[in-house]
Length: 105
Image 1 (cartoon, rainbow, N blue to C red):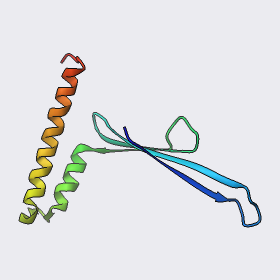
Image 2 (tube, rainbow, N blue to C red):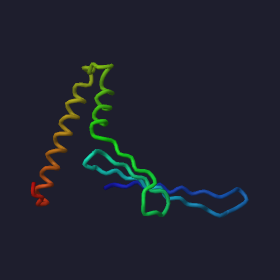
Image 3 (tube, helix red, strand yellow):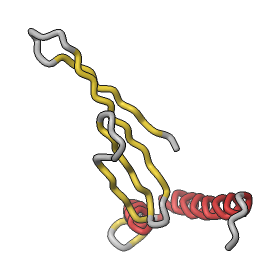
Image 4 (cartoon, rainbow, N blue to C red):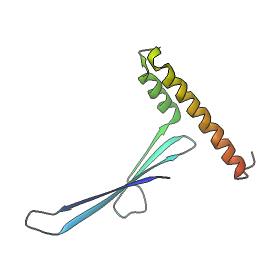
């Protein structure tokens, strides 16, 4: 998992030299239902934001961006082929990792 941490620093006011720092941490996870993004703000144990995008909605949005209405734009043929290859490779990789980890089906 890669996590991204953003430290925001500032002063309370022009007259006050007290510095304030807020840590914002965001990360993404692949779940059984899709891609889950979590955001932690401050020094907390539970995320303040949890958003899950289904794989279906991500695929639909991506494919719609390659088309015009209900028609796939021919200029995106290679993009679509690469997307399909990437998804297939991801499935095959996950299947190998499951076997390596000894998970019985």
